Length: 138
Image 1: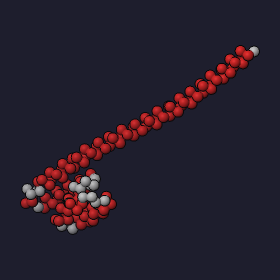
Image 2: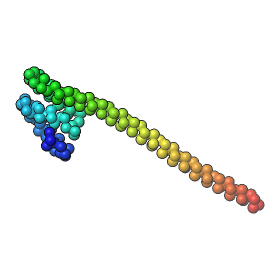
Image 3: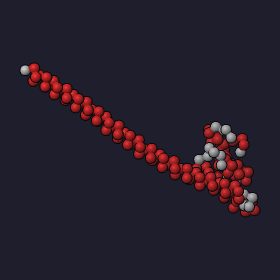
Image 4: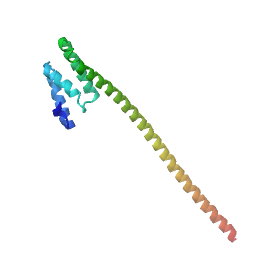
């Protein structure tokens, strides 16, 4: 996992694709490698979820390793829960951002309309002043 620190996103995604292809072999080390990849900070929710599933499959095939893997299993579950919470928060923030953008657009349109109206009123006032001056001059 130390080799994964500072890795670029595209390199990380390439490693994930290679690891996913190797999963079909059912090799224990390939499965555990995939689980470790799923714990990387660049892993999205789907990868974390799949890592948890792969770990669960591994533990089903190796019940004797269950005790040794309790910490890893708990970490995967906690990370999955944190990702779900993060996704939910992100969705709420995006929804709120969209609402605020619509409100800003609406207020911008209202402001533009009010500016046009103010300009029209200024123009009418100028016309009335001109009419008043014409009447005074007569």
